[in-house]
Length: 413
Ligand SMILES: Nc1nc2c(c(=O)[nH]1)N[C@H]1C(S)=C(S)[C@@H](COP(=O)(O)OP(=O)(O)OC[C@H]3O[C@@H](n4cnc5c(N)ncnc54)[C@H](O)[C@@H]3O)O[C@H]1N2
Ligand code: MOO
Ligand SMILES: [Mg+2]
Image 1 (cartoon, rainbow, N blue to C red):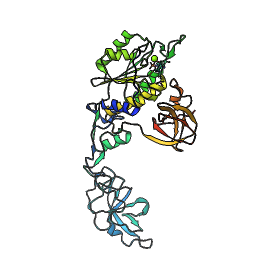
Image 2 (image 1 turned 180 degrees about the vertical axis):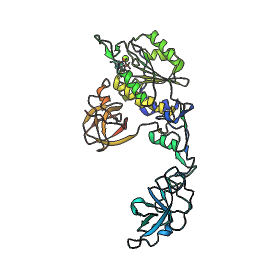
Image 3 (image 1 turned 180 degrees about the horizontal axis):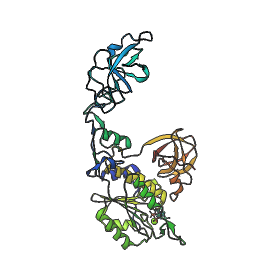
Image 4 (image 1 turned 135 degrees about the vertical axis):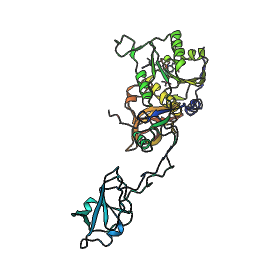
């Protein structure tokens, strides 16, 4: 007798996963290793930026008052009393008609309140002449014009990008507080799976879910422990699950979660006394996706069908991991755009279609053959169209909701 599974709406299934998710502990990493972590604390300006009034140009620092009345017919002469580049400080204080030759980034000398670009001067034996007047503060980068000491620069939960690393370096954060990445075990199950360098015997297939999920994890900066399980053998699989549970926060399995004779994951969750958060979701594909908890450990039982497997990871595992690692925004953005192909199938459940989103023209179309067992459409997709359950007959021109899964290069085909 099969256990009856009650489908849970997708948003509730996601909420159950998230309610079971704790933030990972804070660790400190060198700035150079911090890329793709999330900041675990607010980044506060440790000083004003710029730290001092500085020259934005290569030129001469002058007293603006001395330039009053300058014109083409009345060039005013200045005497150069010092010469500094960025990194040096002039000890001179400017007196009348004196100037310091100054390079971009160097601190404005005492008494000066304007900078004349080199191109606006004509050199003389003593210094230079100029033909226009300058106002106080002209061509000066003012201390604190970008931000003030103590100001909140970036909130906790910011993805550390190269730009963020530049900010952290600016404010002398040589070590950065981030949240530890979870230890993840990845177990692809299935007697039919043949490793990539073995010959494909009748009935066998390649394991595409394993490399795909490993890649989805790598996008989050996580390198999973990979377990090879190429036999649907209950005892063996249970032993592997127990072993993986010793040292991992998350166990992701692919395959074996449905009701088939060799689908052992439901029996394994039982044997492990795991708390099943759900084992049926009102969605297609991926309706058999199962998520279970053992204390703080989470077990993601993703479907074996590649498109269902991919979708299950994006919808459930990804936001959970992002919450663990302290992301302030755990969910992929959703936008509404115009569909450019008919999609006339009925949608008894919420349907996710691997899709090609054209962000420039704000249009979307399915990325080719799109059944649960499809693999090519995943590669061609940068998004998933989300059609609500209980609908049918979406026509070209209709507006549909789209989850953006990738913002990087759009695959062409
Ligand atoms: N009687 C029913 N049969 C099925 C149901 C159902 O509700 N009642 N659900 C169907 C749906 S929907 C899905 S999705 C699949 C889910 O199957 P499992 O999660 O149990 O996965 P498997 O049976 O192990 O494999 C399914 C399919 O995927 C291929 N596969 C598995 N692993 C991989 C991999 N690593 N790389 C590539 N392809 C993989 C496998 O060969 C099968 O073709 O169940 C339906 N059946
Ligand atoms: O629920 Mo299945 O994952 O549609 O193919
Ligand atoms: Mg099965």
